[in-house]
Image (cartoon, rainbow, N blue to C red; front, side, top):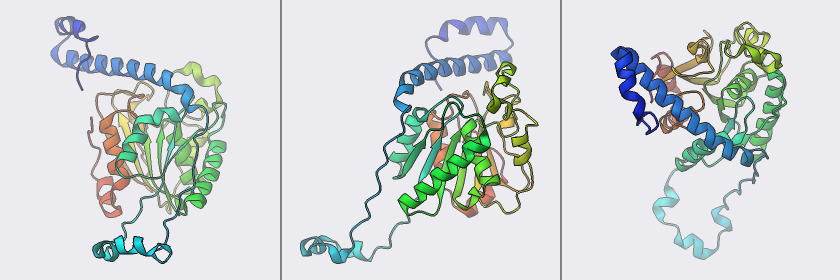
Length: 301
C-alpha cells in the first residue's frame, strides 16, 4: 500500500522521535488511518444510493435445445453439445454492518461479479434494528426467498462487522447451516468488543459486548453445523478490542481465521487484497477448506 501525499510530511518527524520499529508501526498506522478517512468520505457520498432495497430480477432459465429453432441448433458446435455443464456457483448474500447499508459493498460486489458470480444479493436491515436474534430471523426469511427465486439449495454469505454476527447466529442457532455453504466475515466481533463504552445505550451494541447472551449462545456446542466459516480480521481494526475478538474460536466449527495487515475496519470490504481473499474463500473446495482451516491465518494485505 503506497504512502499518501498527506502522510509524507510526517515521515521525518516520526523517524526522528520514535525508534525504528515503533516508527514503522506508526507509519503503518498513519497510512491505515488516512485510508480509513478516505474510505469514510467516499462511503458517505455513496450512502444515499444504498438506502433503498436493490431491484431483484428473477433469473431466466435457458431454453432447452428441443425448443430452439433449427437455425440455432445448427449453429451449436458439436464440441459444445458434448461438453459437460459447468456447475453454477451459489448465490452470494452481502450483509452490511451497524448503521450502514448495502452501498458498503459496491467494490466487493463488482469484484465478485467480474470473477464469475452471477447471482449477488445485497440485503439491508433496518438501522433501527435492536436485536441480533430478530435480524437473524429476518435474514433467514430473505435467504429462503432467494433460494426459491433462484432455484438453489444453498447460498454463500459475506458479512461485514455486525452483519457477520447476524449471519453466524442464523447459521448456528436457527438452523441456517442447511442453507449457508460458506460464511465469510469481515471484522466481526465474534468474541465481543469493548470499544466505545458510551455506545452501551444501544441494545444491539450491548449484544456485541463480551459475555452477552447472544455471544453465550454462539459459544454453545454446535457439533452438527455444516457451514464453513472464514473470518478476516485486521491487526489495525479500530473497532475490535481486543483485535483477536474478530477470530472465530469454536471447537465444533470448521473455521479459518485470516489475518489482514495494514488496514482498518472500514477498508475490509473495500481493499482489493481482501476481495481476492474473499473470492478464494468462496471458491475453495471442501477438502482444501478442511486443510486450510487447520493451517492458521494468512496475511493478505
